[in-house]
Length: 89
Ligand SMILES: [Zn+2]
Image 1 (cartoon, protein in one colour):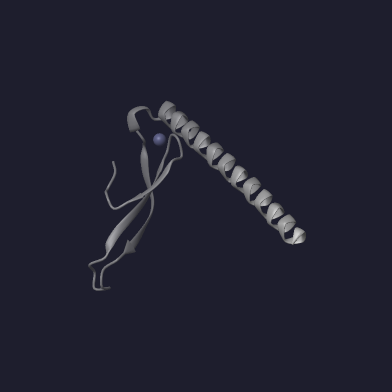
Image 2 (cartoon, rainbow, N blue to C red):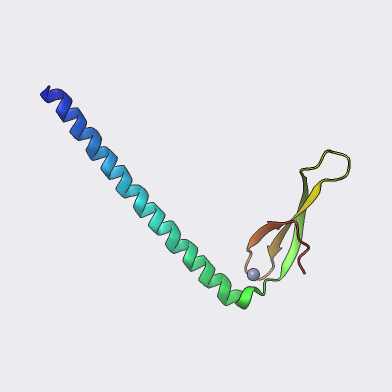
């Protein structure tokens, strides 16, 4: 019985440590995301990205020419990448 309790305690300890680690990683990812947005804003204020089309894909449809075209763009100033069905200038 004692052995079982020790295993349960060890399991809970590891579980708590993993949860703590995950929350730290999430926090740091959010911080990096905020920082990246801040730097993009400095390079391309008010979303003034200089989009250059780099690639395109077809998605959906029945294979008879009714597919939707997805365009891949990259900003020449900040390097941000995006995929959209819109034609960006
Ligand atoms: Zn940009």
